[in-house]
Image (cartoon, rainbow, N blue to C red; front, side):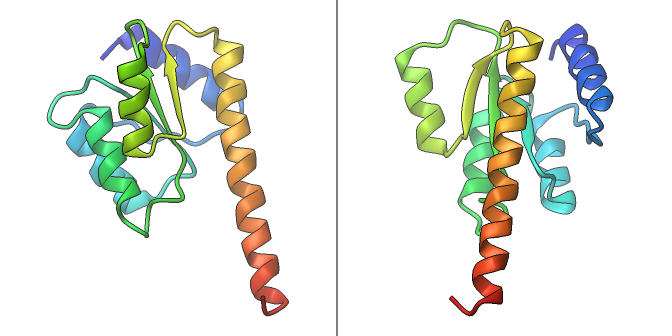
Length: 130
């Protein structure tokens, strides 16, 4: 919902070598996530049609998508109630948009690294018959 923030994130992520899928509302974002199965979802909390909590809940309740890390972003102060809602819907991180770009990129990289390690571990487990 913030064009300047979106432009900054697009620049930072593309500059880091990431391919992007952009959605203008929550419903479109959910549809793209289900169709494309991205490595990570970075979504604003307040979106038209479906909010970030709803997107996260719908994806995390479905075995096909629950391994996709989801970062919820808020433009407002994060309070205990918001953090609890983020945990309940299965968000992997809940961050403020005002977080410095390097800190946000670190959070993204940490989640992507954890996902890759998990996939490698699963593949290794299957390969050795565990």
